[in-house]
Length: 624
Image (tube, rainbow, N blue to C red; front, side, top):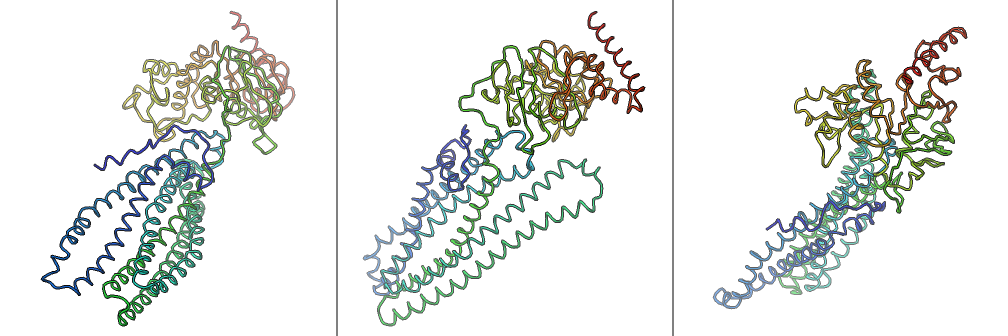
């Protein structure tokens, strides 16, 4: 029967609306699909509280009836009433409470948390690659996970705890007022003191909770970063200094937790003192009323029972309010990260990219990552359809920025980039990246199967996957346990650097895109493997628009054209032989890679003559 409560709505909606940055708006808008559940849960919660108060009140009247009646006539006078109360207690009350629990814990909480997490994940997963480089992946993941928990906790506290306790207190006030309005005086004084305590302590709890969330997030980021890069940490050495830095992060988390616990202990101690004052006031005043026959003994007993229940629930309420504000604080902090506007967003009127030839044009493109330096500076570059262009330059010249802007990992700060005359900001990012295959210098893989790392997700053609692996000289896959189903480990750690790069090449071959971006695509391969792949690579590049970024210049010497970047601008362009003959920056870079650092101008001239001769040999080979 409880299965009826499990699926009140789709917990994973296909919703790409901007994520609200306000905690209140997030709770209202993102949990709106559960509004019917919320209404039903609040209604049942109020009914349960009212029934609880009524039963205590009825118990008081029952005591008076027992005291005033005769055992011989009591059943005849009250038997039907007692049977009705028994049915209410043994059947209706358990069913009502079960329904309330099912609505709260199954229909609401078990769906609110995945809805909130899913919405945060969908929003974050649409952020640009550049956005993720500004924070720890572990921190972002923890905010998505903990933010969803905080949203569900905050809403649950309102629906379940606050609604129940408030309904209980209102009912108790009504019962006490029915005995003697003056009984409300100690209760009223307690409520005022309780409200003052909440006003004083809850903000402190909220701030302490936010500091704890921040410290725990930093700790999660440290752990993920350390465990994901354990080999790098081993190479950096000085474990004692690293341990000191780690200890400081752990210590901040401990200090934040201690601060929160101090607030909680203060709250609990204050609640105990307030509870004692309420009990003393109500007991003393109730006895005084009974002695003057102003109230029957049973109703006084009921009032005392309610006071005990109120004081126990008051601590529960304060814990719930503290939890509510703590959850809201955690949600607010999570939203500051995960609900940031998309750094790169599709235009509302964006259409799928249609590639006719694959011509790529950069017009006055500048991008400095908001720092005013490095990156690209008013770059003009036209790559004709089917042309193979190599891009070289010193480190920091803007080569990788060029590739990132083409794929819209960032949006250019100024200028335009077009493909076949269409501005890439006017097309959907999904269609843009579907028409561009890229092999990056750092071939990072997903902790998935070889098949998924090559072909992605959805329908997969295993024959094409095998063919792509063959073209990439990735025969080692056949020897892996599971073959195409073999898992590669986190970031591909189960494979060598060369093996990872062959899988990345196979991915590009499988996609068969009209535009290909190679960012030092064979840098991790040994000379023998690179030579084996080059013949296949030439075949794959034929008829495609290619932008090949390289530090190892031998890999792009056979490109149709080579452009040389320096300080974000094109300073030279031409074929390999033309650039060598000019004796400029490219010739200098080539000389450094082929002959080492040159000692004098005569040495430079000799190397230039040799490399120019190599260029003539390449041209004769091309004519043949």
